[in-house]
Length: 414
Image 1: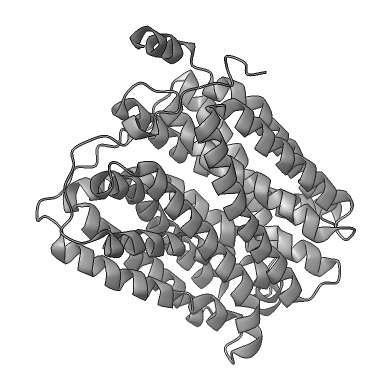
Image 2 (image 1 turned 180 degrees about the horizontal axis):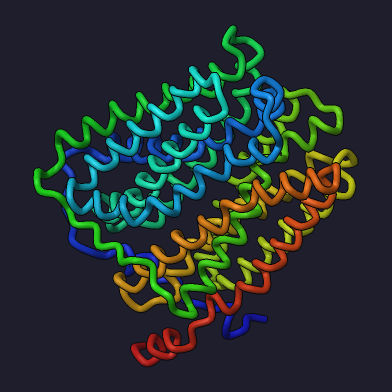
Protein backbone atom coordinates (compact mmCIF):
# COMPACT_ATOMS: atom_id res chain seq x y z
CA UNK A 1 0.00 0.00 0.00
CA UNK A 2 1.25 3.46 -0.86
CA UNK A 3 1.73 5.70 2.17
CA UNK A 4 1.62 9.47 2.14
CA UNK A 5 5.34 9.82 2.73
CA UNK A 6 6.21 7.31 0.00
CA UNK A 7 4.23 9.12 -2.71
CA UNK A 8 6.29 12.27 -3.05
CA UNK A 9 5.94 14.23 -6.29
CA UNK A 10 9.22 14.52 -8.18
CA UNK A 11 9.03 17.72 -10.23
CA UNK A 12 12.01 17.04 -12.49
CA UNK A 13 10.67 19.09 -15.37
CA UNK A 14 9.99 22.12 -13.17
CA UNK A 15 13.40 21.88 -11.55
CA UNK A 16 15.03 22.03 -14.92
CA UNK A 17 13.18 25.12 -16.00
CA UNK A 18 15.00 28.35 -16.58
CA UNK A 19 16.30 30.66 -19.28
CA UNK A 20 16.88 28.72 -22.47
CA UNK A 21 19.85 29.34 -24.72
CA UNK A 22 19.36 27.41 -27.92
CA UNK A 23 22.61 25.74 -28.93
CA UNK A 24 24.11 26.30 -32.34
CA UNK A 25 25.53 22.80 -32.19
CA UNK A 26 23.38 19.72 -32.79
CA UNK A 27 22.44 17.38 -29.99
CA UNK A 28 24.62 14.78 -31.73
CA UNK A 29 27.64 16.81 -30.57
CA UNK A 30 26.36 18.16 -27.26
CA UNK A 31 25.08 14.79 -26.02
CA UNK A 32 28.41 12.98 -26.54
CA UNK A 33 30.25 15.98 -25.05
CA UNK A 34 28.24 15.65 -21.84
CA UNK A 35 28.68 11.87 -21.81
CA UNK A 36 32.47 12.01 -22.33
CA UNK A 37 32.78 14.68 -19.64
CA UNK A 38 30.96 12.35 -17.26
CA UNK A 39 33.30 9.49 -18.17
CA UNK A 40 36.20 11.50 -16.78
CA UNK A 41 34.61 12.26 -13.41
CA UNK A 42 35.38 8.95 -11.65
CA UNK A 43 38.16 7.30 -13.68
CA UNK A 44 40.92 8.83 -11.61
CA UNK A 45 39.37 7.50 -8.40
CA UNK A 46 38.18 4.05 -9.42
CA UNK A 47 41.47 3.21 -11.17
CA UNK A 48 43.38 3.32 -7.87
CA UNK A 49 41.61 0.51 -5.99
CA UNK A 50 42.73 -2.44 -8.16
CA UNK A 51 46.44 -1.47 -7.87
CA UNK A 52 46.50 -0.26 -4.26
CA UNK A 53 48.51 -3.27 -3.03
CA UNK A 54 51.18 -2.53 -5.64
CA UNK A 55 51.23 1.15 -4.70
CA UNK A 56 51.60 0.27 -1.02
CA UNK A 57 54.45 -2.14 -1.78
CA UNK A 58 56.40 0.02 -4.25
CA UNK A 59 56.15 3.27 -2.30
CA UNK A 60 56.55 1.53 1.07
CA UNK A 61 53.52 3.26 2.59
CA UNK A 62 50.77 2.22 5.00
CA UNK A 63 47.18 1.27 4.24
CA UNK A 64 46.09 4.52 5.88
CA UNK A 65 48.12 6.47 3.31
CA UNK A 66 46.66 4.33 0.55
CA UNK A 67 43.14 5.26 1.66
CA UNK A 68 44.03 8.94 1.25
CA UNK A 69 44.37 8.42 -2.51
CA UNK A 70 40.60 7.96 -2.57
CA UNK A 71 39.75 10.19 0.40
CA UNK A 72 41.58 13.35 -0.71
CA UNK A 73 39.79 13.68 -4.09
CA UNK A 74 36.40 13.31 -2.42
CA UNK A 75 37.29 15.95 0.18
CA UNK A 76 38.27 18.34 -2.58
CA UNK A 77 35.05 17.53 -4.46
CA UNK A 78 33.18 19.02 -1.53
CA UNK A 79 35.52 21.87 -0.64
CA UNK A 80 35.99 23.12 -4.20
CA UNK A 81 32.31 23.02 -5.23
CA UNK A 82 31.38 26.58 -4.08
CA UNK A 83 34.49 28.02 -5.78
CA UNK A 84 33.66 26.10 -8.96
CA UNK A 85 30.22 27.71 -9.04
CA UNK A 86 31.77 31.17 -8.75
CA UNK A 87 34.20 30.41 -11.56
CA UNK A 88 31.29 29.28 -13.70
CA UNK A 89 29.53 32.58 -13.05
CA UNK A 90 32.63 34.58 -13.97
CA UNK A 91 33.97 32.70 -16.97
CA UNK A 92 30.91 30.87 -18.30
CA UNK A 93 29.87 27.25 -18.27
CA UNK A 94 31.82 26.06 -21.29
CA UNK A 95 35.12 27.66 -20.31
CA UNK A 96 34.80 26.34 -16.77
CA UNK A 97 34.13 22.84 -18.09
CA UNK A 98 37.25 23.10 -20.27
CA UNK A 99 39.26 24.14 -17.23
CA UNK A 100 37.84 21.22 -15.23
CA UNK A 101 38.77 18.72 -17.94
CA UNK A 102 42.27 20.18 -18.23
CA UNK A 103 42.85 19.85 -14.48
CA UNK A 104 41.58 16.27 -14.47
CA UNK A 105 43.82 15.43 -17.43
CA UNK A 106 46.96 17.00 -15.95
CA UNK A 107 46.38 15.44 -12.52
CA UNK A 108 45.86 12.00 -14.08
CA UNK A 109 48.86 12.23 -16.41
CA UNK A 110 51.10 13.37 -13.53
CA UNK A 111 50.76 9.93 -11.97
CA UNK A 112 53.18 8.61 -14.60
CA UNK A 113 55.96 10.45 -12.73
CA UNK A 114 54.76 9.44 -9.25
CA UNK A 115 58.06 8.59 -7.60
CA UNK A 116 57.04 9.61 -4.08
CA UNK A 117 53.91 9.40 -1.91
CA UNK A 118 53.51 13.19 -1.90
CA UNK A 119 53.32 13.30 -5.71
CA UNK A 120 50.35 10.95 -5.73
CA UNK A 121 48.61 12.92 -2.99
CA UNK A 122 49.05 16.22 -4.84
CA UNK A 123 47.67 14.67 -8.03
CA UNK A 124 44.73 13.29 -6.02
CA UNK A 125 43.96 16.76 -4.64
CA UNK A 126 44.12 18.35 -8.10
CA UNK A 127 41.95 15.58 -9.46
CA UNK A 128 39.31 16.32 -6.84
CA UNK A 129 39.30 20.02 -7.77
CA UNK A 130 38.75 19.20 -11.43
CA UNK A 131 35.99 16.73 -10.62
CA UNK A 132 34.31 19.31 -8.36
CA UNK A 133 34.15 21.80 -11.23
CA UNK A 134 32.77 19.16 -13.58
CA UNK A 135 30.17 18.02 -11.03
CA UNK A 136 29.03 21.59 -10.43
CA UNK A 137 28.80 22.53 -14.11
CA UNK A 138 27.07 19.40 -15.42
CA UNK A 139 23.56 20.16 -14.10
CA UNK A 140 23.83 23.76 -15.29
CA UNK A 141 24.94 22.59 -18.74
CA UNK A 142 21.95 20.25 -18.95
CA UNK A 143 19.57 23.06 -17.90
CA UNK A 144 21.07 25.38 -20.47
CA UNK A 145 21.12 23.16 -23.54
CA UNK A 146 18.44 20.55 -22.79
CA UNK A 147 15.83 22.27 -20.58
CA UNK A 148 13.03 19.96 -21.74
CA UNK A 149 15.04 16.75 -21.27
CA UNK A 150 16.68 17.25 -17.90
CA UNK A 151 15.85 13.80 -16.54
CA UNK A 152 17.12 12.05 -19.67
CA UNK A 153 20.43 13.95 -19.77
CA UNK A 154 20.88 13.53 -16.02
CA UNK A 155 20.55 9.80 -16.59
CA UNK A 156 23.07 9.94 -19.44
CA UNK A 157 25.78 11.58 -17.37
CA UNK A 158 25.02 9.34 -14.37
CA UNK A 159 25.54 6.33 -16.64
CA UNK A 160 28.67 7.98 -18.05
CA UNK A 161 30.12 8.36 -14.57
CA UNK A 162 29.54 4.68 -13.81
CA UNK A 163 30.85 3.45 -17.17
CA UNK A 164 34.00 5.53 -16.73
CA UNK A 165 34.53 4.10 -13.28
CA UNK A 166 33.99 0.58 -14.60
CA UNK A 167 36.39 0.98 -17.54
CA UNK A 168 39.13 2.28 -15.27
CA UNK A 169 38.61 -0.45 -12.67
CA UNK A 170 38.61 -3.16 -15.34
CA UNK A 171 41.49 -1.87 -17.43
CA UNK A 172 43.98 -0.59 -14.85
CA UNK A 173 45.23 -3.96 -13.47
CA UNK A 174 45.56 -5.36 -16.99
CA UNK A 175 47.48 -2.33 -18.16
CA UNK A 176 49.67 -2.48 -15.05
CA UNK A 177 50.74 -5.99 -16.07
CA UNK A 178 51.35 -5.18 -19.74
CA UNK A 179 52.99 -1.73 -19.55
CA UNK A 180 56.69 -1.40 -18.72
CA UNK A 181 55.82 1.53 -16.45
CA UNK A 182 53.54 -0.71 -14.37
CA UNK A 183 50.85 0.84 -12.21
CA UNK A 184 52.13 4.36 -12.86
CA UNK A 185 51.46 4.14 -16.57
CA UNK A 186 48.21 2.28 -15.96
CA UNK A 187 46.93 5.13 -13.78
CA UNK A 188 48.19 7.87 -16.10
CA UNK A 189 46.83 6.44 -19.35
CA UNK A 190 43.28 7.50 -18.49
CA UNK A 191 44.34 11.08 -19.20
CA UNK A 192 43.75 10.22 -22.87
CA UNK A 193 40.01 10.27 -22.18
CA UNK A 194 40.39 13.83 -20.91
CA UNK A 195 42.02 14.75 -24.24
CA UNK A 196 38.94 13.44 -26.09
CA UNK A 197 36.62 15.38 -23.79
CA UNK A 198 38.74 18.52 -24.18
CA UNK A 199 38.49 18.37 -27.97
CA UNK A 200 34.69 18.06 -27.85
CA UNK A 201 34.27 20.89 -25.35
CA UNK A 202 36.56 23.22 -27.28
CA UNK A 203 34.17 22.70 -30.19
CA UNK A 204 31.21 23.46 -27.93
CA UNK A 205 32.89 26.56 -26.48
CA UNK A 206 33.69 27.97 -29.92
CA UNK A 207 30.02 27.81 -30.91
CA UNK A 208 28.63 28.90 -27.53
CA UNK A 209 27.25 32.44 -26.92
CA UNK A 210 29.98 34.87 -25.94
CA UNK A 211 28.39 36.07 -22.72
CA UNK A 212 28.99 34.15 -19.51
CA UNK A 213 26.02 32.43 -17.97
CA UNK A 214 25.67 33.12 -14.26
CA UNK A 215 25.54 29.96 -12.19
CA UNK A 216 23.52 30.98 -9.16
CA UNK A 217 24.47 28.25 -6.71
CA UNK A 218 23.76 29.41 -3.18
CA UNK A 219 26.24 28.83 -0.40
CA UNK A 220 25.50 25.77 1.75
CA UNK A 221 22.65 26.50 4.15
CA UNK A 222 22.19 25.25 7.69
CA UNK A 223 18.59 24.16 8.02
CA UNK A 224 17.30 20.91 9.47
CA UNK A 225 16.34 19.73 5.98
CA UNK A 226 19.80 20.54 4.65
CA UNK A 227 21.53 18.67 7.45
CA UNK A 228 19.39 15.56 7.01
CA UNK A 229 19.85 15.56 3.23
CA UNK A 230 23.60 16.07 3.66
CA UNK A 231 23.76 13.18 6.13
CA UNK A 232 21.87 10.93 3.72
CA UNK A 233 24.14 11.87 0.82
CA UNK A 234 27.23 11.61 3.04
CA UNK A 235 26.33 8.18 4.41
CA UNK A 236 25.72 6.68 0.98
CA UNK A 237 28.94 8.31 -0.24
CA UNK A 238 30.89 6.76 2.63
CA UNK A 239 29.56 3.36 1.62
CA UNK A 240 30.27 3.88 -2.09
CA UNK A 241 33.81 5.21 -1.75
CA UNK A 242 34.65 2.64 0.90
CA UNK A 243 33.62 -0.08 -1.54
CA UNK A 244 35.36 1.56 -4.47
CA UNK A 245 38.69 1.78 -2.64
CA UNK A 246 38.74 -1.57 -0.85
CA UNK A 247 36.56 -4.13 -2.66
CA UNK A 248 39.40 -5.25 -4.94
CA UNK A 249 41.97 -5.48 -2.11
CA UNK A 250 39.47 -7.53 -0.06
CA UNK A 251 39.30 -10.18 -2.76
CA UNK A 252 43.03 -10.05 -3.44
CA UNK A 253 43.53 -10.79 0.25
CA UNK A 254 41.28 -13.83 -0.22
CA UNK A 255 43.52 -15.20 -2.99
CA UNK A 256 42.16 -13.60 -6.15
CA UNK A 257 44.56 -12.21 -8.71
CA UNK A 258 44.75 -8.48 -9.38
CA UNK A 259 43.05 -8.99 -12.74
CA UNK A 260 40.21 -11.02 -11.20
CA UNK A 261 39.69 -8.45 -8.43
CA UNK A 262 39.72 -5.62 -10.97
CA UNK A 263 37.15 -7.48 -13.06
CA UNK A 264 34.93 -7.85 -10.01
CA UNK A 265 35.20 -4.13 -9.28
CA UNK A 266 34.32 -3.27 -12.87
CA UNK A 267 31.35 -5.65 -12.64
CA UNK A 268 30.27 -3.75 -9.53
CA UNK A 269 30.27 -0.48 -11.49
CA UNK A 270 28.40 -2.13 -14.37
CA UNK A 271 25.69 -3.23 -11.96
CA UNK A 272 25.55 0.34 -10.70
CA UNK A 273 24.42 1.40 -14.17
CA UNK A 274 21.61 -1.16 -13.96
CA UNK A 275 20.68 0.00 -10.46
CA UNK A 276 20.75 3.69 -11.36
CA UNK A 277 18.56 3.32 -14.41
CA UNK A 278 16.13 0.88 -12.79
CA UNK A 279 15.68 2.84 -9.56
CA UNK A 280 15.30 6.17 -11.35
CA UNK A 281 12.72 4.86 -13.79
CA UNK A 282 10.70 3.08 -11.09
CA UNK A 283 10.62 6.11 -8.79
CA UNK A 284 9.86 8.44 -11.69
CA UNK A 285 6.86 6.30 -12.64
CA UNK A 286 5.57 5.61 -9.13
CA UNK A 287 6.57 8.78 -7.27
CA UNK A 288 7.56 6.65 -4.25
CA UNK A 289 10.93 8.22 -3.51
CA UNK A 290 11.12 7.21 0.17
CA UNK A 291 10.35 3.60 -0.68
CA UNK A 292 12.99 3.64 -3.41
CA UNK A 293 15.58 5.02 -1.01
CA UNK A 294 14.70 2.42 1.61
CA UNK A 295 14.81 -0.50 -0.82
CA UNK A 296 18.16 0.45 -2.34
CA UNK A 297 19.64 1.07 1.12
CA UNK A 298 18.35 -2.30 2.34
CA UNK A 299 19.80 -4.13 -0.67
CA UNK A 300 23.14 -2.40 -0.10
CA UNK A 301 23.16 -3.36 3.58
CA UNK A 302 22.26 -6.99 2.90
CA UNK A 303 24.91 -7.43 0.22
CA UNK A 304 27.59 -5.79 2.37
CA UNK A 305 26.84 -8.23 5.18
CA UNK A 306 27.17 -11.12 2.73
CA UNK A 307 30.49 -9.78 1.42
CA UNK A 308 31.76 -9.28 4.96
CA UNK A 309 30.80 -12.72 6.29
CA UNK A 310 31.05 -14.99 3.23
CA UNK A 311 32.79 -13.20 0.35
CA UNK A 312 33.77 -16.34 -1.56
CA UNK A 313 30.50 -18.29 -1.46
CA UNK A 314 28.62 -16.49 -4.27
CA UNK A 315 30.77 -13.42 -5.00
CA UNK A 316 29.21 -12.48 -8.33
CA UNK A 317 25.70 -12.59 -6.88
CA UNK A 318 26.76 -10.56 -3.85
CA UNK A 319 28.37 -7.93 -6.09
CA UNK A 320 25.32 -7.86 -8.36
CA UNK A 321 23.16 -6.95 -5.37
CA UNK A 322 25.76 -4.51 -4.09
CA UNK A 323 26.00 -2.71 -7.42
CA UNK A 324 22.23 -2.47 -7.85
CA UNK A 325 21.80 -1.10 -4.33
CA UNK A 326 24.68 1.38 -4.37
CA UNK A 327 23.94 2.42 -7.95
CA UNK A 328 20.25 2.92 -7.24
CA UNK A 329 20.53 5.01 -4.10
CA UNK A 330 22.90 7.58 -5.68
CA UNK A 331 20.51 9.14 -8.23
CA UNK A 332 17.61 8.86 -5.79
CA UNK A 333 19.56 10.85 -3.22
CA UNK A 334 20.27 13.50 -5.85
CA UNK A 335 16.52 13.62 -6.50
CA UNK A 336 15.75 14.63 -2.89
CA UNK A 337 16.34 18.39 -3.46
CA UNK A 338 14.08 18.31 -6.53
CA UNK A 339 11.33 16.48 -4.69
CA UNK A 340 11.38 18.45 -1.46
CA UNK A 341 11.56 22.07 -2.65
CA UNK A 342 9.05 24.33 -4.34
CA UNK A 343 11.35 26.42 -6.56
CA UNK A 344 14.50 26.14 -8.63
CA UNK A 345 16.43 28.41 -6.24
CA UNK A 346 15.47 26.28 -3.22
CA UNK A 347 16.45 23.10 -5.03
CA UNK A 348 19.76 24.64 -6.06
CA UNK A 349 20.52 25.80 -2.51
CA UNK A 350 19.67 22.43 -0.99
CA UNK A 351 21.76 20.64 -3.62
CA UNK A 352 24.75 22.88 -2.87
CA UNK A 353 24.59 22.18 0.87
CA UNK A 354 24.00 18.48 0.32
CA UNK A 355 27.06 18.11 -1.92
CA UNK A 356 29.29 20.36 0.18
CA UNK A 357 28.70 18.64 3.51
CA UNK A 358 27.88 15.23 2.04
CA UNK A 359 31.14 14.83 0.12
CA UNK A 360 33.16 15.89 3.16
CA UNK A 361 31.43 13.17 5.17
CA UNK A 362 31.70 10.67 2.33
CA UNK A 363 35.43 11.22 2.06
CA UNK A 364 35.93 9.53 5.43
CA UNK A 365 34.68 6.18 4.07
CA UNK A 366 37.96 4.84 2.60
CA UNK A 367 39.92 6.08 5.62
CA UNK A 368 37.48 4.45 8.04
CA UNK A 369 37.76 1.13 6.18
CA UNK A 370 41.56 1.26 6.23
CA UNK A 371 41.62 2.13 9.92
CA UNK A 372 39.25 -0.70 10.84
CA UNK A 373 41.22 -3.04 8.58
CA UNK A 374 44.44 -2.18 10.42
CA UNK A 375 42.77 -2.60 13.83
CA UNK A 376 40.97 -5.88 13.08
CA UNK A 377 43.45 -7.50 10.71
CA UNK A 378 40.83 -8.21 8.04
CA UNK A 379 37.95 -6.78 6.04
CA UNK A 380 35.05 -8.45 7.89
CA UNK A 381 34.62 -5.67 10.45
CA UNK A 382 35.06 -2.77 8.00
CA UNK A 383 32.44 -4.11 5.58
CA UNK A 384 30.07 -4.89 8.44
CA UNK A 385 30.37 -1.24 9.49
CA UNK A 386 29.62 -0.18 5.90
CA UNK A 387 26.46 -2.32 6.15
CA UNK A 388 25.45 -0.39 9.28
CA UNK A 389 25.99 2.87 7.41
CA UNK A 390 23.70 1.61 4.63
CA UNK A 391 21.06 0.90 7.29
CA UNK A 392 21.55 4.46 8.55
CA UNK A 393 20.66 5.68 5.04
CA UNK A 394 17.48 3.60 5.26
CA UNK A 395 16.57 5.37 8.52
CA UNK A 396 17.34 8.81 7.07
CA UNK A 397 15.24 8.27 3.93
CA UNK A 398 11.89 9.34 5.35
CA UNK A 399 13.01 12.49 7.23
CA UNK A 400 15.17 13.57 4.27
CA UNK A 401 12.30 13.34 1.77
CA UNK A 402 9.33 14.06 4.07
CA UNK A 403 7.83 17.43 3.02
CA UNK A 404 4.17 17.84 4.02
CA UNK A 405 4.30 21.59 3.31
CA UNK A 406 5.18 21.02 -0.32
CA UNK A 407 2.63 18.26 -0.81
CA UNK A 408 -0.15 20.37 0.75
CA UNK A 409 0.71 23.30 -1.49
CA UNK A 410 0.67 21.12 -4.56
CA UNK A 411 -2.68 19.57 -3.67
CA UNK A 412 -4.13 23.04 -3.23
CA UNK A 413 -2.96 23.95 -6.71
CA UNK A 414 -4.66 20.99 -8.35
